[in-house]
Length: 611
Ligand code: M6R
Image (cartoon, rainbow, N blue to C red; front, side, top):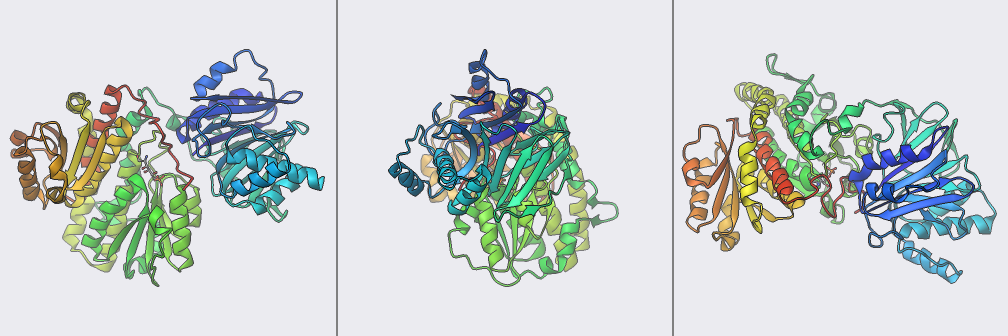
């Protein structure tokens, strides 16, 4: 939610910030702005995409070696020029960008208004900025001191970056609960919400922690805590290539990321799975194997697509490990009074590793003594740092707002974790263990087969693109895939879609079925197959349109369905890694056919760092 970029050094700041904002646009895209210093502040901001900001500044004074930029996902105040960041303080000297929410902004605003402050926007950000300015004025102190005092009095989450027109040699930033990376160059520093705006200039980065302040000059980086104690910055090497964050010839990131899946699944397995030797090497699991094997219960917490991966894992872990599993929405778990018992293991799943609800849910479980095992895609992310152990999905940067390759990689990691526990626990036979290792090994090749020819899926998308509603049905391992298919369709095409366990349909949703309803079945050959065939009959009897994902060689469903999408046969435990791919493509092609911006669907953002 919201992308921030800042620069200080010997180069022109504006082009670096603009390029960085384009890379961070996936985090929010309802307005954008920059603040530069050249004999005073120059602030330019615009409702809409970064490209609109770019157009609007043609011919303006853009010269500066220091600057801050922001791309917004609105929380307080509608998307508009005046609510766009950066905001400028009442005295006109300070400019600030912010990612997060200041929860006690209303009281602070009232206090400031009583002192005569007037506000130009509806944002919590402008309140915090004037609060800082007010402290500075009253205490006659430096901006850094004023910021420290202010941050001790605000509640909420933030990354903020400030510039002072009277001190154009310094950038000041602070973090609590939202991500912030510093790029360390030669005589220059970069700041951003993630490393993508930084990688082409430097590979040396520092991840700022909560309650830390960074004071940056061209050749100086000072890190402090809120108690004004200096900290030693831990400089890490970035393991990211520029090509990974570019479209590489595809029309959209979403399509590129769907097509990357044979490689990302392979990368996820690489160095871990050896089907011939019969081994799975995962140090994160190995170090906590005893606790995992003996866990009385596993609680999975996640949001959105990651929650769907958790649901698949519930089926897999219970089947293979015979450990009870509960799958929780992080947003519900954090506000309940959840019961976490001694020995319980929490598996937290998150692509970004920055989802606010998941972070707080983890903290809550940790307070009660749970072991936290993170399944994450972004190395060094907030959740990675608060987990006791974990496993990365190695899917590479996922930029399209819809999660695709991260999901399949999550399924692969979760299945390997389950297999490792089950093998150590001896809760499955050697024969099933070897079969599943071999099946996992074959997933990248089978995913490539699905992607070899996607024309049929594109035609189906075009045929049903004007449907008003869609129902997604599946059973067993494929029930969460039905949920995921429905989520993908609604977020990318804005068609109302619901996912349901196929058998539940007759307890209500069947009332919706008529000739205008598209019903998508995930109906691969598995334990539930015959039952699903009966459910298809029930839909056909009521004239619903049936579109089914089926296994190669299936001769039963083809004649019954209006359309089919065929995937290679696979063991039911690995089938979800494949059955989801046609549904990802279907939502992509539907969104494109409806003329929508599939990489940046309305109202959404990639990284949900507000609750
Ligand atoms: O980064 P996370 O995996 O924690 O994100 C969770 C959800 O916000 C995310 O999966 C969201 O549902 C996606 N837009 C789905 O495509």
